[in-house]
Length: 165
Image 1 (tube, rainbow, N blue to C red):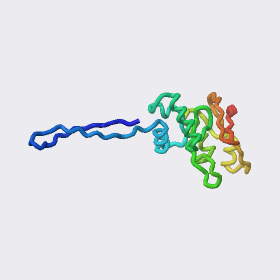
Image 2: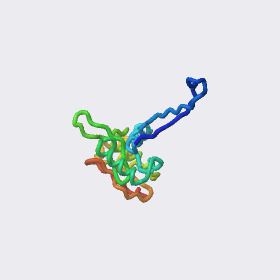
Image 3: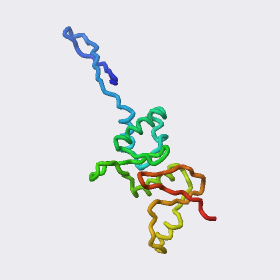
C-alpha cells in the first residue's frame, strides 16, 4: 500500500505571477510484520509477549504476524503467548535461541516479565554454593504464586515447583 504526501510551494510563473505547485511524494507503508521485526530488533529484552506489541495492531493480527516470524526463524515460541529472540545457526541452518543465558535465561526473563515471584531451586543454590557437583539438565524454579504455563524449547522444558515451607 502506498501513502501519498503532498506539499505546496509557490513559484514564479512565466508571466511573473506566483503559481501554486503541488509536489507529491509517495512512500510505501510498512507491514505489521516489518514493524514487529523492527520492534524486536530494537528491544532490550530477549523475551516477548503479544501485549508488548498491542500498540501496533489487533491481537489476532499480531499473533498471525508472530507466527510468520516463527516460520522465518526470527523468533522462537517458548509457550503460550511467550516468544524469544532467535537467530539462524551457522552450522545447521536451523533457528536457535539468541537469548543471554540460553533457555535458562529465557525462562528467567519470562518469569520476571510475567511478574511471577520466583527463585532458583535448592539444587541450583547448592551447586552455586559449591556443596554439590551435580548440574541439572532442565532448569527448575521455585515459584511462590500459582503458575501453570509450560515453557519449553525443543527438548528442554522448565519445571516449576512450590517451595518448601
